[in-house]
Image (cartoon, rainbow, N blue to C red; front, side, top):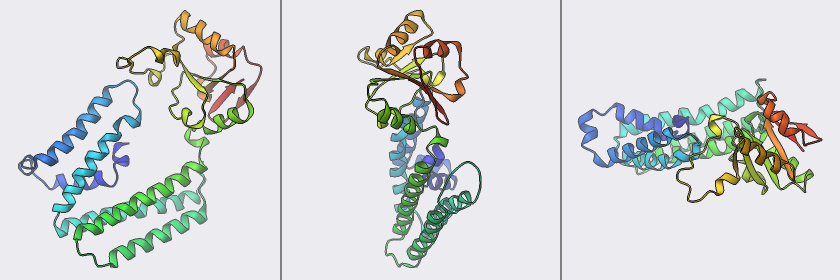
Length: 284
């Protein structure tokens, strides 16, 4: 996941350090400090129980600074190699999207949008390549900027058309917001949904029944307010607390993959209605 999120700079960094020997790397303390800091951040947050991708976002600022330093010092031949890498990465995205739009693999994409995106990408790359630029590394910077624009445009289009395939909580939140006005609490069974707060202002409560990804790092909390939003139903106290919460102005949400364990069946008995989405079930 990190190589994909760090594109295109992580590929340029790998190429650069592959060409360097240990002596050359150690003689550049600034680059070594930046790369070491990024590696330490990844190592530290890999130890945490709750592995959210947001935890490692600071890594990419150090990678970007290191890449910028490398570009300003790179030779013309190396810059040409970097440009080829970028052009390949840039064209892969719209070409892949166009291919997906003609395939029946469960993802939706507009063929018209994909064709326009691919042709526009090729046109802009051609203009950048033909334009005479005084500073050699600026062409690499322009191609990198284009990569980011293509990634954002294609990503937004892909996400907007494939919400249900990507386990998005958005459809569930829209249903609750539009149809269940009296609901104050959304209780999620044994699954952590960090994005839920972006789609609704309801109080999100998670019921922990042993799933690894539900466990949170709480040793750094300054108070015990987190206990109101994360309830361990593996204990009798937690079960009683969950039942009390569900009995008043609440809905219960679970993944379709949970296969109705006994605890879930008992908790859902207080509800009369049930609605299924592709990846979610809501009791209300």
